[in-house]
Length: 400
View (cartoon, one colour):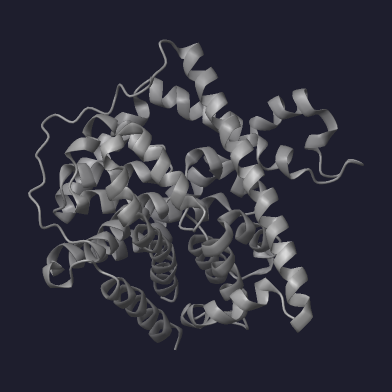
C-alpha cells in the first residue's frame, strides 16, 4: 500500500508541474524520462547498495566531524554559550548558526583552491551527457549539490548572460531544491542526521532537470560554451583573504537567517494570537492543507498531519522551522520515516527565498532581473516539488 501511495504521490507532483508548465505542448518526454530513471538508480545506489550506503555513511561521518571543529572557535569566542547544558541553556544563534561561519570559510578556501569548481565541472559534465541537457544545465544543477541558490551562480557568473529561459529555470529549480554546504552544520546541530542530508543533496541534479523541463521546456537553441572553466571564480587574491571572505559570507548568512527567524516566528505568534479567537493555530492550518501530501508519503504510523505541518512550515516560512520540529523527534522515528522527512524538508523552496534568489542572481547579471522575476515563483514551487519527490523516491526504494 505504501508503494502505491508513493507512486501516486510522484504522479501527483509531476502532474502539478505539468499543470503550471509554461509550455505543455513542447515538453520533451525523453529527457524527463532519462532524468527520472537516473534518479531512481542513484537512489538505489545511495540507500540500498552496500557500497553506496557505506560511502554515504562515511561522507556523513566526515561532514559531521568537520563541522564539529567549529566548536573550538565558537567556544573560544562565546565560552559557555556553546554548551547547551550550561546555565545559559540552548542558544540557537551560537550553537546552531555559529557553525555556518566556519563552514563558510571552508567553502571560501575550497573555491579559492579550485577544488570545488573542479569537482562540479567533472560531475556536471557527466550529468549533462547522461541526461542530454545542455552543458550549463549540467554544471548549474551539480553546483547546487554543494551551494545555495545564490552561491552557485557565482561559479557560473561569466556564463549567465548566455543562458536560455529554460536553462534559467533549471538554475532556479535546482537552487530552490538545494542546500548549501555552508548551512549543513546548522541542520546537523538541530539533530538532522548528516547522511540523510548528504542523500538529499546528491539527489538534487536529476530531479531538478526533470521538474524544470516540465515547467519550462527548451524551445531556444542553447549556446554551446566551449571549455567551461569553473576553477577560478574566487574573488580572493590569496588564501588568507579567501578564509576572511568566506567567514564574512558565513557571518552575513547567520545575520540574515537570525533576522528572518526573529521576524517569521514573531509574525507566526502574532497570527496565532489572532487565530485564538477561533481556537486555531497557523500550524494546524498548515497540517490540514498539506496533510494529503503527508498521506501520499506512505509512512507507517499516524504521520499525515505532522508531514503537512512540516511541509507547510517549510514552504510558507523556512526549512529551519521544519527542521527545528523534526530534529526533536527524528531519533524516535524508524529509518524510512526519518530519512523521507529529512529529505522532504530540505532545500530553499520557500516563499521567503524568492526575493533573495532574484536579487542575488540579478546582482551578477542585471539584464536577467525581469526574466528571474517572471520565473521565480514557479521555480520556487519546482524546488519544493524536487524535495518532496526525492523523499517519495527514496521511500519507494526503502520498501524493498
